[in-house]
Length: 65
Image (tube, rainbow, N blue to C red; front, side):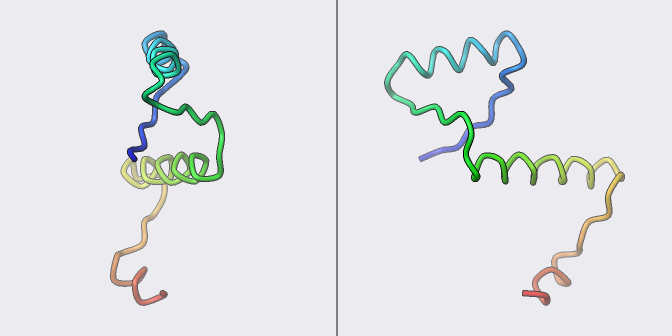
């Protein structure tokens, strides 16, 4: 199984989603907790990369587990 995030706001994204729905080789999940958490994580990562949010060093993160 693979997870792909498609921007449905673009014309190409809408076309790709429609294609995938019609082929029968893929299942399109509109909303799910997993999709929401991945989207949230990617938006936080973008904020860290742009310097708008401070990230946690890997060693500190692992020590907290």
